[in-house]
Image 1 (cartoon, rainbow, N blue to C red):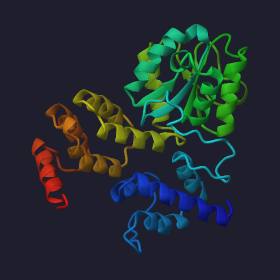
Image 2 (cartoon, one colour):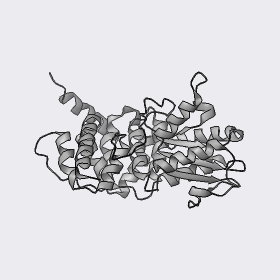
Image 3 (cartoon, helix red, strand yellow):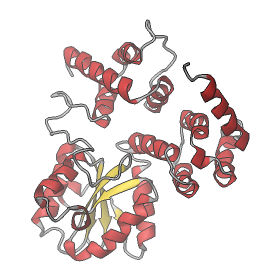
Image 4 (cartoon, rainbow, N blue to C red):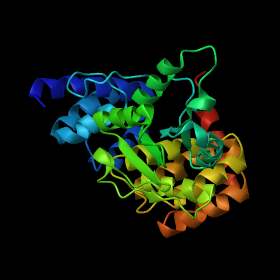
Length: 312
């Protein structure tokens, strides 16, 4: 990447993070990339903070952050950027997984889609997600150019389908993670280097679990997925939803301390999580990281603090 391109991209990242996040959220986001967060900005500005921290960071990390934030710049990719608002079939705030499959297997894929939502993963399944009034090819393209990863269900007949091969081709061109699911067909061609997940003899829930484990551990997707899951926990609409997402969070290997600390700080902002059924499993996580336990009283303290800060 040329020096001028790096300056331009950092500027765009600064503006994007200034709009999206608070200071503490930017720190947590940077820490997930191993970026030091002890810098004191010359002005009390999130934009300035980002502009002063990122120039020292490696180009590949800058490009990965820019790509994750959906920033459009020639140095990032020649592939068109599709905004989440344009691809309305994705569940807001979820990790976006395109499932490439044969139409004959659509019933099972529909069940798999529901199982993956437990992990905060929204799946694009053409037969369910395309409205009859829309051009189906345009919608598939939106899914392909906005996905975070692609899952290919390999089974007899998959090779012979022009559509599935082209979908994989887009994933290869975009350099996104491809997860081959082996169902009586081994990975071939450009995806032959991937071992794939063996689905024979497993039920749908076990396949969904296998996909989750790959996404949550692969270097291409781990950071994006972890950040997504943390925000989904904090935005849970019910305590059961929060518990379900927390169960996925705790199963991720090598959880960064800053993510657990960030959750501990923000949980008390969501009244839906004010429940011992949620706090008990979270406190078990906090204990492993030598963090203080949360109690129902902490939610009341937060409420008092919020009132104190209200402008007159």
